[in-house]
Every structure is written in C-alpha cells, then in structure tokens.
Length: 284
Image (cartoon, rainbow, N blue to C red):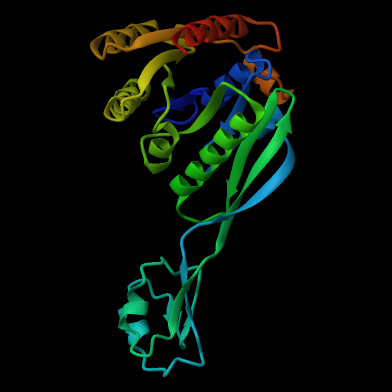
C-alpha cells in the first residue's frame, strides 16, 4: 500500500484544494485522511457522512483524591503552571508534567485520561475519509495525526485500497512530521512569493531528513514569473521533481463556494491538476 501526502511550508497555498481534487480523480480507489487536525477543512469540499466516531485521549491531567490528600500544600508549591489551588486541580491549566505526583507525600494525586477530541471514519462521494477534530486549546495534535493515519491504514486494508491520500498539516512542526513519516511521496504545494520560497526551502529540508521523495507543485505560478523561475531553480538545486504549475483562475473561488473540487468544474486549473495526477501516478 502506498501513502501520498500533500503538504506545504505555509498555509493558504492550495494544499487542501489539491487533496480534494486528487481524491476526485482517483475515482474511489483510495482512502483520504485529513491530518490537518488543528484546522481541518477538507470536509467542506468532500462533505463526509460520519459512520464511526472514536474518542481521542490526549495529554493526561492530574487529579487529587480528597480522601488521601493531607492538604500539605506541596503540590501547589511545585506546580509551575499555577493549576492547583485549594487542593484541587484546574484541568485547563494542567500541562500533565506529573511533578505534583512526585512531590505528594501521601500519593494522593493520579494522572487521568481526558478526551481531547474525536476521530471519524466517514463516507464521501469519492470514497472513505478519515478525519478528526481537536478540541480548542488542546495539545498533542501530532498524536491525533498518528491516530488518523493508523485508522486510514486499517480502513484501506479492510477495503482493499492501494493508496492512502493524506492532507497534511502546513509548516514544519510536530503535526507535519507525524503526517509525512513513512509516506512514499510528498506533494509540496508552494506559491511564487518571497515567503513561499522561504517556506519551501524549510519543508524540503524536512522531507529530505525523513527520506520522503518530494514533488513540487507551484500554485498561481503566473502571478510572479520571476519567483516561479526561482522556485524551479531551487527544485533543481535540491534535485526535486516538478509535478506541475497551476495558473491563477478566479473561477477557483466559485468552485470552493459551491463545494466542488477543481476537476469537477471546467477551467485551466482543473486541466493542470489532471497533469499533476498523471505525474504522481507514474511515480507511485
């Protein structure tokens, strides 16, 4: 089974839009996983109908047992996050560091699991989709990404699919690392701007470190041809293949508003995405 991840060094480069379009072109031959758990939006285009729901247990939080507590106050003194007062733990302030459990002389503090979000297996018009919601203010998004990927892999095995398509997180942080680790190809979306070039350099460094083969796609390439040439020079410098160039098209906004992928409507961007998909299939 192959795993293809769509990533970007920054947000707003067309990553999710590309993922939805590739899902449409695959004609049900894959499982889609939305691993941008901090700000998921793939569901806005694919409109999933939830079939199964799973609790996500994030960071553990401390809880004081009043029957064992001697009210010595050692835990409150040791807590650097001011999460303990009047011998009670505020779960919103607790960072799960466990220092309070170490200093408590009566062993009255336990670490308990807490539900930090949910993961879902859903049905879309293009096949099965696995996605998740992380509750506001919760941590461990990388752990939730791993949960989504594991569920997607199991579903793909169960349904006999040969490809898992992952909508990864933007940037280079922990959720991105969890999104790309173990994948065969990373389709890196970028744009012809100074920040686009800078962030492309960073994300290519990440793919190189984790041994994932990158392919670069330049979105709205015709808005700044000089920057597009610079990106292509960068690809040659890193020995990275160019998957394609997408032109600027005002019709993209109309397609998004109507909840359609770019290959479901007529336009130059949809035609360009067909070419990108052909190059990806040749690599896979």
